[in-house]
Amino acid sequence: MASDVTSIQSIAVLGCTGSIGVNTLRVAALHPDRFRIVALSAGSNSALVIEQAKAFRPEVVAVNNPDSAKVVKSALEPLGITVLQGVDGVVRAAEWDGVTLVISAIVGAAGLLPTLAAIRAGKNIGLANKECLVMAGELMMAEVKRHQVTMIPVDSEHSAIFQVFHRQQTPQSLVLTASGGPFRGWKRDALTAVTPAQALAHPNWSMGRKISIDSATMMNKGLEVIEARWLFNMPPERIRVAVHPESIVHSMVTYADGSVLAQMGLPDMRTPIALALSWPERIESGVETVDLPTLGTLTFEPPPERDAFACLWLAFQALEQGGTAPAILNAANEIAVESFLTERIAFLDIPTLIEESLMTVDTIASPSMEQILDADHTARQFAESWVQQR
Ligand code: NAD
Ligand code: MG
Image (cartoon, rainbow, N blue to C red):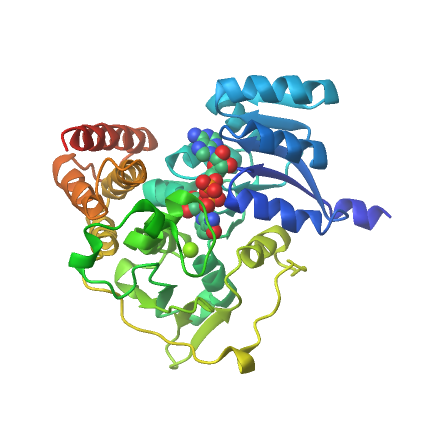
């Protein structure tokens, strides 16, 4: 029927081999009548992207790593699938003709240029890549406005806020919930010798490695505060954090009449992913509805002190500083997390390195995109040399 044909969404999944990417394809596979996967893009996991492409038959697959791209090319070109490589290839997949919705799920600063390209090509965005808003939130949201595209958050907290945020009711504050990660309640001394394996073991969520470490340091919540500042145009002093270990309430908005509106659900990213795919409708996501009567107690506590979890407060500080400071924070954090995962620095070196980067790398007020990318580059160089001197 014609009406069915017009309602098909043509989707590009950037970061298709990651935790969010894989879950996006799982949700899309539940609704073959509704979603067509037109473009896939991955970093380097050739085996998985080949398997995905054989299952979903996209028009184009882009692989960043040139060696992986060669492998993918020889497997998929005989099937009539275009294979592109490098950053340019990923950007071209993001702009691909006929795509209506781009799920932006590359991890880190590498997500910025493809997401920006998608916006400029007039694609609606389902945004998981929070780092692009941390780096360049003001400029990215200006592009969203200019190109009249819709940006639906995939991050569970922002998806929650998006669902209960009513601009005309003048929201007073946003309250982002945080699980507290694997080290909730730990004191600074206990954190000195934690290993990557301990830090990767998140109590509630199964996620990629980088965001898992960000959750353990609480930088993830700091990045999310900055993400919320731009997504909802909310001044930083009206964004708060509450620790909620059960991860059932995904975030809240408070209003002048004393109301607090929250969204609840099991901690499973398929729920916010499904919403980003189907908004303004709701579809089956494969996630069960949370059963409150059998769930027991939900608890909330204030965020931890700066002493043990400085990353959260460094993010507030960078947001306050403005300009290129959040891009410097993000770049230093990416290097610090990678260096911790490869056991070149200790867990508590992560905030130290970020703080030193913020103090050392010059910040520029009201930067252009080019200046933001420069700040990212300079901060990475500083952070790398800091790690080497360790
Ligand atoms: P992941 O590490 O599991 O996957 C990352 C994806 O990006 C992979 O497909 C990888 O191949 C691709 N990639 C990495 N570097 C690339 C590059 N240079 N060029 C092109 N592609 C590249 O990460 P994830 O956990 O799925 O997270 C993705 C994004 O979503 C992050 O920004 C994260 O903060 C955000 N997010 C994730 C979750 C979660 O539950 N995993 C929740 C909320 C937000
Ligand atoms: Mg989140």
